[in-house]
Length: 233
Image 1: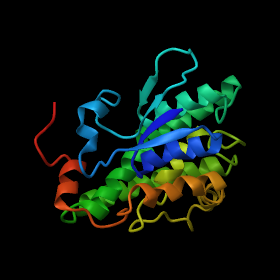
Image 2 (image 1 turned 90 degrees about the horizontal axis):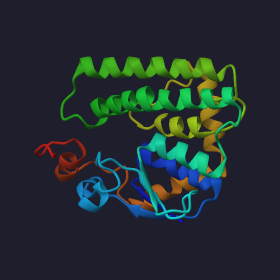
Image 3 (image 1 turned 180 degrees about the vertical axis):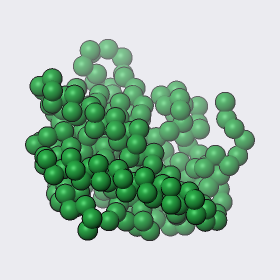
Image 4 (image 1 turned 90 degrees about the vertical axis):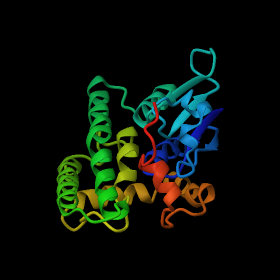
């Protein structure tokens, strides 16, 4: 059994996508990041960077004590290696999957998050930031579109962890949707993943876990989400 420390955000969705595809038994342990659950000592013991998601695997491959893993990319890689699924077995295929996984972790996710922050959550518009991150996300979408003109999925012909990592960051914010008209291969890829039954099950958890998903943030939620309080050591 896997304990999934989760809140329905793009990074949280990555892990439910994998678990639903693989059919692994798991229990959701909600981490209400708007209420500050990510700063609780028991959560920091498994995720020292006070970020969600994290997992605890009670049946690790080595048969030893429960294994905790934090960082969404590391979790996807851990689960792929544990199950032998969604990661190419060939050396070159594995390299491609890891390239695109790390590309998402280092580029698509952070840049899209900043775009969303300055377009959706910032208390006042900052034109430079809005333009800077909007242009960078559009560039990254172009990188994806070019890759997806060559193959069905990011690492090749098979759906895998690089796709699971990237999918939740495409159309993450209704206010700033991707320009699918300019990126038809990205649209085809996005629609194909959205249609998967496991994707639909994973995203159904959004309102089950957080009935207030999509509602305006309170001042308290902003404080916890955007580090507006004292810096925590």
